[in-house]
Length: 118
Image (cartoon, rainbow, N blue to C red; front, side):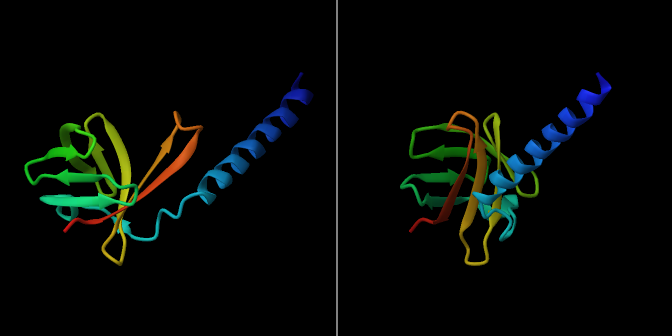
């Protein structure tokens, strides 16, 4: 039994490593600095997908889908919106980059880029 278990564990480790590399290949996250609350507070961002989001200075959150909840930055680079958390970074050109893995979207990475709305 031990003879069979070692190759099985080795194969499982290789699959895990290969899956991680594949997932990382689909996002360019890590090109900016971790977002801070001051980068979002009191600002409205327009997203590459056509929607917009308002991060009110008092912590209220509203978007073009009609969602109303609260937002915060519990740690650098992590934005909590309602019960969810996502990774955010501020790019050198002033855009914000939002990344999350979506298990309900065919297990894929979702990248969005936002700019300050006029």
